[in-house]
Length: 278
Ligand SMILES: NC(=O)c1ccc[n+]([C@@H]2O[C@H](COP(=O)([O-])OP(=O)(O)OC[C@H]3O[C@@H](n4cnc5c(N)ncnc54)[C@H](OP(=O)(O)O)[C@@H]3O)[C@@H](O)[C@H]2O)c1
Image (tube, rainbow, N blue to C red; front, side, top):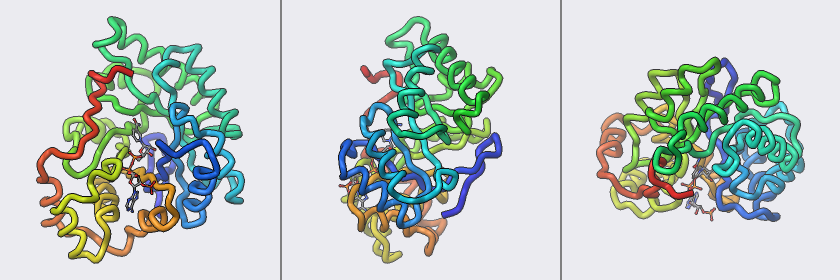
């Protein structure tokens, strides 16, 4: 797997191993080890996934040097604000048993629906992330589930976000947010690149996949990469973990890319950052 370059020059491996809904148990320890053994060097977790200890154990047992791995975590919604974010970061680091993170993200923006001072809350959280970044405890900082109106205020601060991790898969492309990020040098990462599995039974994708002798999962992952969006497929099944990394021996042609892009809105999680109630 190759690396992509963030707007601060830091390199990020072009596929990340997702761990949402991976339990805090041997299942995740073994999943992380299987991923690293077959070539993944980028792991995506979050305090809210409640599996950071298992992820950390998998990293340690993999035998790969820390400097050769890229580890992301996220500050959860109950921990927004300056002091709480600093404390949440320290807890994440301790749970993962690491001494720095490669990437730390604000998991969801505070929204207008819940807070009159939503912009101020996001800025205070961002100020904590910036201080941790300047102290060298995080190599890159960013956000998740931010739409352009959430990003606006952050773009006026000293350190601009390097990443925005959003829902992105066939049938759900968030064009406006992707365009904004691209214009502002923010790398987009795709969460649920397989729609948490919902993509896999789509007949159009199945037909396209059969032309390439690939699985629908591989088509979805490759499609993200060809859009310069960094996919984060999740699996705890060793054969699927490996399958999801084998996407570099083919290219989806322009016609099929357009056909996938044109698929009608389907398979979305329904989670709108301005509407969620968590
Ligand atoms: N920032 C956010 O708000 C946010 C939100 C959601 C997700 N994420 C991140 O994005 C990652 C991926 O999203 P996701 O967890 O929703 O799922 P996903 O990668 O879209 O899909 C995962 C599901 O598909 C199955 N699967 C994986 N590869 C497969 C294959 N090759 N063939 C058949 N089935 C396959 C998995 O099953 P098994 O595991 O049983 O094999 C699992 O049920 C998360 O793990 C997390 O790191 C972030």
